[in-house]
Amino acid sequence: MVSSTEQLALHICTFLATTGLVGLATWVLCTRVMTESKNTGAADDFFAGGRSLKWYVVAGSLMLTNLSTEQLVGLNGNVYKDRNLAGIWFEAGAAIAMVLTATVFLPRYMALGLTTTSAYLGERFDLCTRTMGSILFLIFYVFLVCPFALYTGSLAMRNIFELHSIPLWVVSAVIGSLGACYALCGGLKAVAVSDCLNGIGLLIVGVWVPAAALYQLGGVSELFAHPDYLKPLAEHSISAPWHVNFTGLFLTNVYYWSTNQVIVQRALAAKSLADGQKGVLFAASMKVVGFVFLCLPGVIGLALVRQGATIGGKVFTVPHDDEVYPELVKAVMPLWSLGFFAAVLVGSVLSSFNSALNSAATLFGLEIYKVYINKDATDKRVVFVSTMFGGGMTLASFVIAPLFEKIDGIFSFQQHVNTVLSLPLVSIFFVGIATSLPDAFAAKVGFAVGVVAIAAGQFVPEPILHFFHVYFVAFVLAVSSVLIATYIPCLRRMCGRIGRPISYVQRTDKAVVDLMRWRPTYLLVVCLLTVLTTLIVSLQIGALRGNGVQEGPGRWDLAASEIR
Image (tube, rainbow, N blue to C red; front, side, top):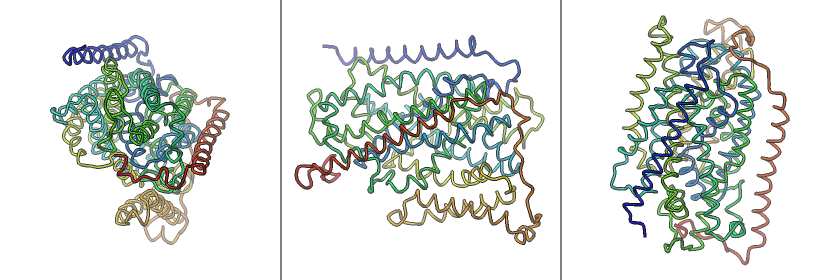
């Protein structure tokens, strides 16, 4: 029998070997294969990868930037708590927003040669609107995204490897320091390449865990013995009751996938529009099937607890909702594989953390420092200052991350805060993309109304109105105020504006890459939406029919407390 010391040594060696190989491969690819473009400078190479990313790198980076422990831990925890598959809308449902990114948003961004999404607000409206967007993005990344990624990753690592004696901030600091090396030393190219490589390992583990758990459960047939657990359109759900899918949840997906700098920056670094579209749509295809490892483990955990399953001589239990995925990993993964799993898990944490860190550094350098502090700064100076800002942001994340430990339902908390911060942004981005007449004055009115409306909405009790519905109502108010400030001449003149705005004309002369669209784009969009619809309808019908053949009333209606 292998001793605990030998097991630990094996895990450490496997972890270091896997992590080291990813780091070495990233260095080789970035310095020997994906060399700096001759047509770009130091700043463009650092912030936009030299506009050299091919479609598969874009796709891999998009998938792993989104796929992190906040989803593996948080979303599976939500599914476990909901006792249904409503959380699938955060994954498969996001494909709809990604389709909009590939067909509507990305062509406009790339036609303007943008490096940041907030720069679009400057092109469409004015500098002040652009700065407001940049500041809101920075607040979001500094105080939520980066610390949250470190917290969920540290929580998973501590639980899986039973490192409870080590303070959470120590684990966060180790993981964060490693991520900062990629983001601040290698720039976007290193981040994107390491994301792509780590994504391969994460896909392997992502399929491995639910497959092994299903084997312990007794096969797929046992999973379908609990039809309510597989219902994607549920009336009662903490994360996503069916009626929010068509209001606030859809809008937050649009914000995340179409305007969020962390995500869109990867597509903006593509070598051509066609590569960007292919990368986004391939990632969207993976999102449709991604629920297998981001939602299904939560369902399997429910079934194992209800079954009273014994794995490895121990009864499977889940002490806390957010611990269902780590507990499942400990139960079904062989000991020899845990080092590899740790490396993959850390890779997923690094992806979210260093992506947000790089994007925040990009925004600060290009949107704040270069615009307001030192307009004549050289590219190297901007990169240096951005790196220093990123270093300070890393230290701040070390302090903030442990504070999340007292929060119950971390994924729902993140979504709630996300709605508050993103509402003003998604409102004016929507107006800017969908219309040509509203000007900077109207956008500022919409931004202000959005801030007030979403802030006031926080006082509405959730039993009365779900926070995603609050988000939708605030969005409607913000957009309506934009239209009022655009089409009522007397109001505009009272505010010192001309009676009718000058219509905006989209420019294409600033493009720095080939703008030829990928020909099969719309064919793939139709196929993607067809598969998504078939998946949702099949799960819903299966769940409803399963309810109709239960053996006696109340067969599966145990209280939530009985499965914990």
